[in-house]
Image 1: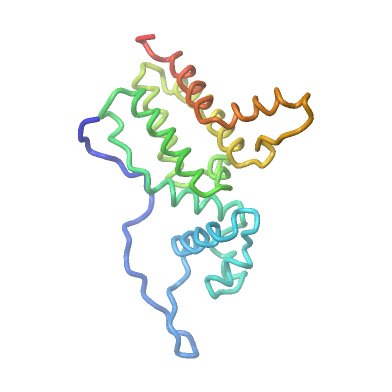
Image 2: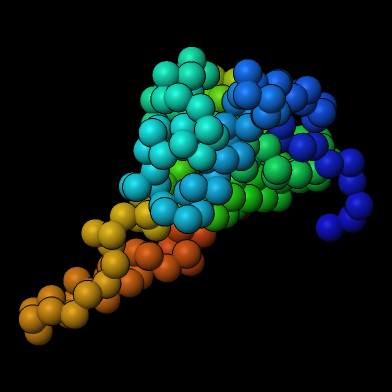
Length: 219
């Protein structure tokens, strides 16, 4: 791929140095905001995983009350979306008109899947109508690629909805313990082999390619 202007999927404001607040005991701390919350939540996720992450534990890590945390984040689901959206914001993609639509679309999908799987439990980022800025930017970037393939805006939305469901399925399969191959009675061997195929990334890539073939004029 030749060098092109790249688009960073971020809806965040430029980083600024946070002024410290002096407590009554003379100690200083950084004011609580969603960026800091996401950063500390990511640390906890890496240590204990999504299942054991709690708002109380995060409040303790931030040295604030749980009530103070709820002023910024509604619940654990929103917290996971916040972390996931922060991770999606690190994805850098070429400009939306800088290469063939299928190349850019595939890159956007694979990059978002890889990013969300870097910390298990972040599928919630896409399992909602409350998309945060970076997830929203990725959705719009992807829909634009289908428009470049010749679809109307409504058709592009329908096409991407199919891919969206495929991605959600991939994230669920990767993150769920129910899809880990296990040995069992002889009669289960066939199913065990199927589960292994289901978890194989190649099955996802083949399905994605087949779906995109429908909209490729050269197929």
